[in-house]
Length: 115
Length: 114
Image 1: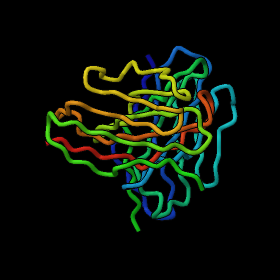
Image 2: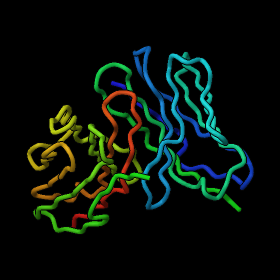
Image 3: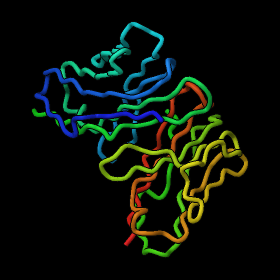
């Protein structure tokens, strides 16, 4: 079974600075998708960024980018120019490309942004 | 912008009582998911529907949990009887279909069992 590990329960960053959240995963599959979700306090979870495993190019969405290292099974999220609104729980998630398989989430990293 | 609706947002119940949660997915979304999120952990799938059919309920504690999606639109998740260990956030999500489509999450129902 696939597992997702987020080794940083909490992180903090100064406003306007850059922070990197770590994620590793374990799978024997070659085709899959990886995601970062953001869950603000008392608000719904939203997708931040996704990465297809077959793509070598790292995904980027505005201030959010990933460092996808397939061989190392690592998928970190970099947030540039951090804003107060970035404060939230961030979850790394995995989904197999084959069949009707569910998302597998890590335990999350709580990000605080200091003004 | 269309959103997934859930109610109630908060529920406090005593153990051994019955409790039900409701979810209305984004219109046109064929796939609906119920997740349980225990405090300090990531969500875990309880049940997945494709239209009105259950496609995965392998992690649903069927002795006390039930889920239905009559007519393939909104869905209800029921717990009877509730136990202290059921205290958690229950999240509903929907997607256009299963596969690579993005899942959209509702705000969740926070259940506290006393």
